[in-house]
Length: 109
Length: 114
Image 1: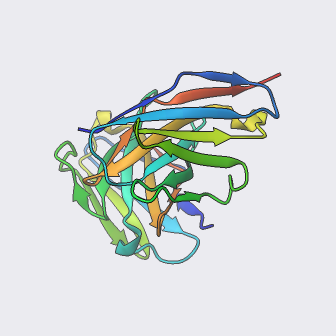
Image 2 (image 1 turned 90 degrees about the horizontal axis):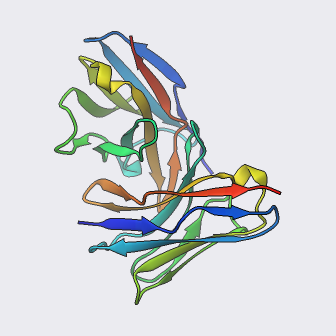
């Protein structure tokens, strides 16, 4: 069973840019892993921001973008806002099985 | 629109079993997954059941201790976890995927305590 790894915590200044990554112990994360990114705030269920590497939903602010970077899935936030402070989870699919990353606590400070 | 409504909070003793339900409203042709999350911790995938053939797939972490079943006539899925221990005290979600989005139940808290 693969282990999916994320940065435990990151800090970004308001208006700044930060990239969160999602790596797999079984090798490179590719489009065939259909990576998702979720935002979760305290007491709430996760909300999908990005699916299948880079696809946004209508509710996903344009400042969030997804990509593959150096064998990992990546979530880039450009122009951070105070309301972006949250925990971000990635999800990697291995066939029908899912593995979540450990989550990245993003602080906007 | 897909809606998932889970059964209420559970309190169990160590060694017991728990069965959590998830009623699905709205059309979904994708499988129903179970995920758990302790406060401030990572999301942990437990397993899934296919909507078509009812086949199941479980995380190795829970293999042998979990059973996911369904009642297709009532559109309800169940997750039964046995041999409960204190580390199973956490929030359990059902979730399904459609159109690139994950729809979540409201969560069922489980407390395992003597």
